[in-house]
Length: 299
Image (cartoon, rainbow, N blue to C red; front, side):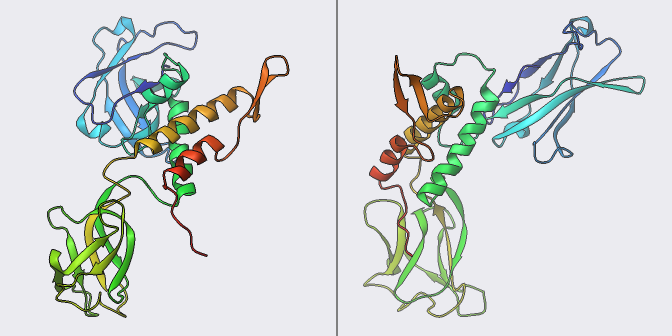
């Protein structure tokens, strides 16, 4: 079975699934009910796709599935199969993959494939797995995520300076800072004039300070979980260009290492040898270190 790649949030078109028997010949689907089932590899008993397919011309062995909006709402990598049922007997195709590239990753399949010069789709599942892994490796090395999320977070109360997670802005509807008095009601809503976000003129913001015009003298000092902030969190509004470049480069290096049997030396004495650094490669470190993407660590 051929792997399928679908863009996130795509909907409304038919996925065409050719079904063959064990010898590779077209399967005549006359009298069969065909069901598409898909699951995440880590939860094989929970089906995220479990829907009937349409078979217009049974002798052609083609089953189609109408893609719904809910099917591609989030990026993921699924294993899948088609089940053919006739008079109570169930037959299944070989497993294949359905890849829905996530917008939360730091580079795309098309970017990586262009870098590697790959034109076919037979490696999409494998490459997507490497893109996922590289995102985690970059986050681990930098000590932060480069995705944004709008949510509520809580911090212990302090004096006139509050250190916070990476923050993009407190500008959305319902965003703001609330202080508690110890009863977890967060009744004291700070106005924008009460505080300043630092550093000025750039993101991420990493601390809040009381402004000279503030109506408060502290951030719920001494109160556990005394500050509630509703905001957009993250390094900046979009993934930085250099982080995207580092991600593409890291995936490309991993693929080069795979082709070399995961050796860090590629080439020969006749053609010349290139040493590829391992986790993280020196080229990637230069980009991440030079762009000040690595969070300072205090020990």
